[in-house]
Length: 167
Image (cartoon, rainbow, N blue to C red; front, side, top):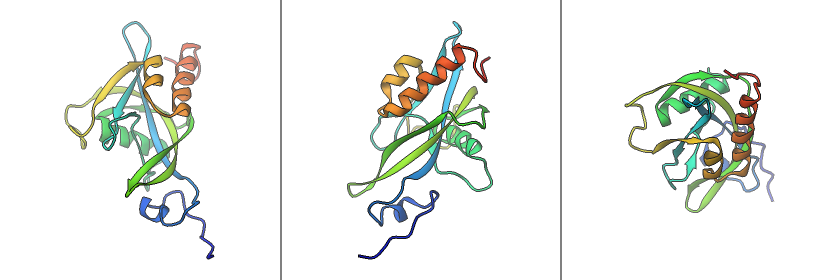
């Protein structure tokens, strides 16, 4: 049996599915948030294009952009939001990305908080997804990945306790 070379986390999904047992692929995601009039934190979720499940904006790292800046760009492209992104990651979560013909790719997503200041009517993926603001507990219950749900809860608890970035 031939040995498979180690793959870069920035490789394409096509290359990643060529060899079974490959390491996870790195993606970046934005936890888009704002404060409601009551001061409670709300989280923006979007639907995935393929299955319609609730997720955060995410995608592949981009050349000449920090991971946080790439996550902010994904938030703009997929949800039409602009705001202030923090360079420090909240943590990671893993999920299985469908890549066609019943095959999946394990992806690990590094999540960056993005405080939303503006929502646009027109953006690159307008009409391809739904967007909706949720209170923290509801958002955590809507996402399918337990690690992402835990990141959402921990982020909100940190803000409520006056942690870094608390406004």
